[in-house]
Amino acid sequence: MKVSPVCRRGRKENIAGSSKGRTSLSESENFGSIPSPAANRSYTCIVIGNLLKYFLFALAVSSTSTAAIASGPTLSVYPQSVIQGEPIEIVVQNATTSSVKSISFDGKKLGVFSYQGLPTAFYGVDINQKPSIYKISVALSGTTTLSASVTVGARQKIEMAFDIPESLGGNSTSSANTLVSALSQENAELLKLGTNPRALWTNKFTYPLSQIIVTDGYGYLRQTAGVSVTHKGTDFHASVGTPVMAMNRGVVRLAKRFTDYGNTIVVDHGLGLMTFYMHLSKINVSVGSLVKQGQVIGLSGQTGDALAPHLHISVRIGNISIDPLKFMAFFK
Ligand SMILES: [Zn+2]
View 1 (spheres, rainbow, N blue to C red):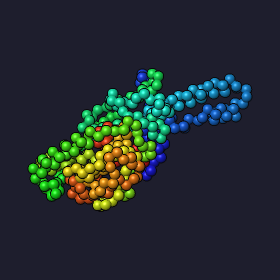
View 2 (cartoon, helix red, strand yellow):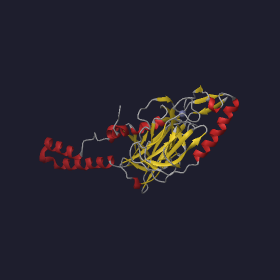
View 3 (cartoon, rainbow, N blue to C red):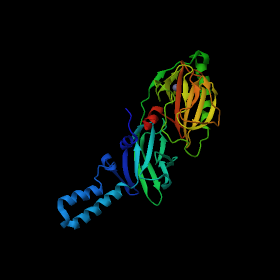
View 4 (tube, protein in one colour):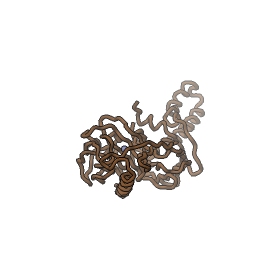
């Protein structure tokens, strides 16, 4: 079911923070169930008439104070509890992007951009990040700070046998070692890609295929001939030649054929947010091209370490590959 952006943000923890601590506000407190000052005043007028102007004045002052508190900057963090390998969205409500000096996770500064008119940041929890409670801090202009905490839990380790295609030598120890060696070289190249210093996108992210059928999820361990490789993306059903679309506006940082990842495109959306499209049969774009959201950038295939035609998608936030389906949940 589709959820409107307002409802989606309403699910999140809403915290009115200060350097001295924080106070949790309920959803209703943050989204206008408090009667407006005008409504309070007119209701009171009918009940007590003009003889009690003093009380009217007192009520008006009280209502104005409530409105002032409700309109101050607050911090929304979604979700408040994640497991290793999942993304976190941080939004400063009732603030402008220019008023945010920094947003940090456990002391690490994050890229801040404007999304739906609000200062926003993403954090990618590494699949090996230590399970713990981490602090998110926001520094606003002046001396105001907001803070919240997020719990990172352990991801259940699931191991599954995975065959190496005959084209890459089949399930032998030597081909497994060759695969791992090639993977480490390919990963090193992917980690070196630069990113734009500003966000290149404004619309919601969209799926890269017109029909979405997940065939393999994120985060489990693929076991082959004694070698274990973590699957840090999501596989989608796609027969060879299916159009693959850019998930959002961005610049192509890589477009080439790898041994393991096959034909690969990387689109940089700015501030370290990147989407990866792998095992393609055809690449339609070149490095440096600016692509639009929904633009067909290639065709799906079965190149590289792929046992059947499919599209592998990875989403990286600051070089951390997170669960793409959890990321897409931010844009429902
Ligand atoms: Zn995959």
